[in-house]
Amino acid sequence: MGAASPPQPTAGAIRDGEHLLPVRVYYEDTDFTGVVYHANYLRYFERGRSDFLRLRGISHTELRSRESPIAFVVRRMQIDFARAARVDDALVIHTAYDARKGARVLVRQRILRDGEIIASASVEVACIRLDGRPVKPPADVLAALSV
Image (cartoon, rainbow, N blue to C red; front, side, top):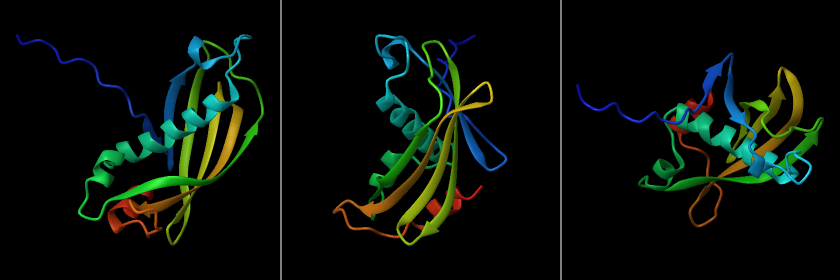
């Protein structure tokens, strides 16, 4: 028998129109009190948005390598912190791509621990060309965002 291939990182799963990404809180994510440092919630939310796309067959690398390269940038983000996440917590990042308006896409995200909301975010991302100008996302990307 050949050698087993190494396990691949998970990109989560899509259930009931939402992407779910399990995340473990590591010591490096926390401040000296063992509480997740506030800026790390942005990283968790970013992982949720990126892995949603990856699970739907679209990677940031693929978007940049297209004949007409594009990227997504965060235009606006509002975060509500409800509770503290702590070292060793098992969190689940919930991500849903909602409304689309031209180049803009609205994203609703939540971080839960045992079903309890830790933080929630309303995110507006914009699709841009690599020169920074906004562009409507291509049809295949819009289809991937619709679950």
